[in-house]
Length: 270
Image (cartoon, rainbow, N blue to C red; front, side, top):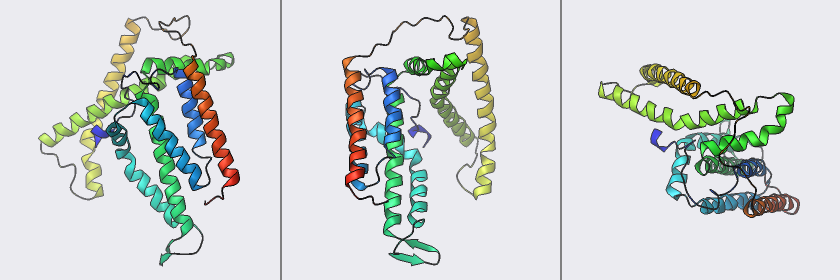
């Protein structure tokens, strides 16, 4: 299961999505996150899902990679959908005790599941197609107006990027610790809930120790390279908006406008 977690990883490529300006990708990702919550009918939700499928094709990433990224969150999606399935008013199609399934509940469950899937795929594509350095620079450029308010823009962008960068590292470290504990005879899968929680202690303690050690090593490396923050720093690559960035912005604007139009002309089902 841990090997299926791909959050924070970057996969180099030369697709149209890889070549987009990082600032534009950040803005478009945020716009899509907001747009996913606009549809109130099945047609709008289907349009949002088809749009994301089109973006996945543009990224030229293996479909197996995208599907693998959704595997760890499937239990959470199913749990959320089941809760929404029974939490709705309307004419009951099936009822037992306090549990009742209604057409509205089924619609809510489908909407929640599809929305979460679209959000996960959309945000994952951002890190898949953008290097950590480009992501840091793009985020810092977008937040640069906040420097007037003495907001630590560079430090916040650096911390967010380091956190994303170290997710795969910590997952790999966790997998190694679990394998080492199993080789020593540790039983991590059998027993009740309390026993499984106790079995995690020999994993969490070495993981915390390893995390703090890596943090100290990173801080020492940055100090040895005379890192003093973003003031006066130059960049090897300068960002410039190109025609493809403007086209992608227009496509996103048309997509959002279509969702609003569908909400106005198609009857909501939730």
